[in-house]
Length: 211
Image 1 (cartoon, helix red, strand yellow):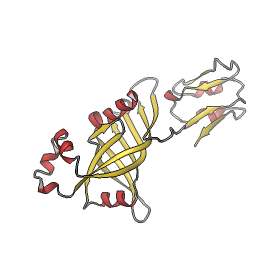
Image 2 (image 1 turned 120 degrees about the horizontal axis):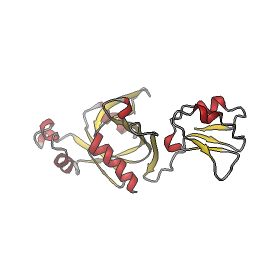
Image 3 (image 1 turned 90 degrees about the horizontal axis):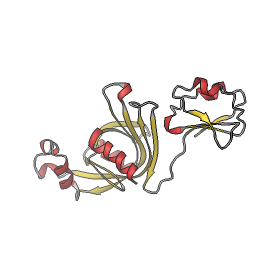
């Protein structure tokens, strides 16, 4: 739970603006920039106006995909991605969100101008925290709201003969000897780029990909 809170805090307080993908009436993807304004142990919050196409798309399909990034260059980048489900909460939390995000008072300066605003909560989903600013890189998969954590990336099967070829081509040195099975290697998923180099060079096809 502490880790999840830290990720949500980074999303809201450090990055703040995200790109959210939704599906339109023609089943085509549409993206828009959205500020993520608050979080708690159960998810994150944002708002929109009922007059926007974004609201219509959310009303028709409450599944979204979110990406948020910060960093002045590629090698300083931290990103958070979440695939999940939202629900509309209405106007009750708007006053609090405006008090926490004071710049919103310049966009919607009066109570009457906020008449059409409504709050959404991203309350369950799967996500990934990815940090390119450290070496080796850091990747953390997470889930919330009762969703089962998705296992992604590559894994080594019992066919491994520990020939060492995968280690030679791994850009992050995340393939190491498996201490429990001395004749095999294993992949440190928190440092894996999912590049697939290991699969290409394995002579016995011992490495497979999840999903």
